[in-house]
Image (cartoon, rainbow, N blue to C red; front, side, top):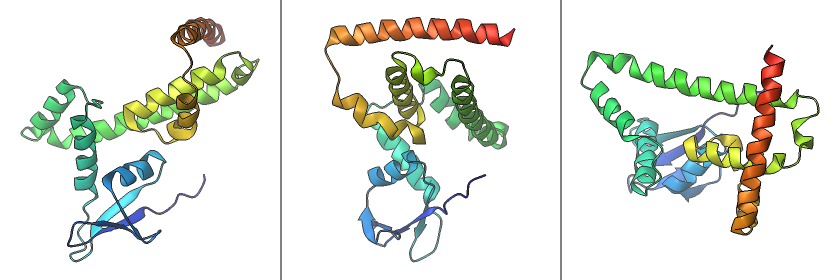
Length: 188
């Protein structure tokens, strides 16, 4: 297993400014969100008291994204989270959420691994790169998946005309149907 980097230490000064100890410069909440999207763990501590403020700032990042209309958390989930703070389920909810996200990450990794083993390789299929960019954009919008930012610039650099997009979507649908057929044959 590869070694993991230690968390990026961010110090909060009394002025509420956030200081990146690795690069020796001030950062914003959006910068911190970018570090996390890139796969880096962060730890935010109060310079004076040494209190860990990471949870508080991560919740603030989520709240800002939600307030800008980037609704990732359905209203029902938010309601259930609030409700869990007032019930005995409080002890179960954090574990359930952690396990759910862990399962999602593992499933995505397993799917990529399984697709790479197909013969012929998926990368050789026409339109695979477009499908991969769309998957990464979806994962990024859902939860800021670290690998999702890899081709973000490619997808935005050449949007193409609307007709080409429809053709791409139809091609991807056909490829997905073919993949499902292959996977069902492999499962037998």
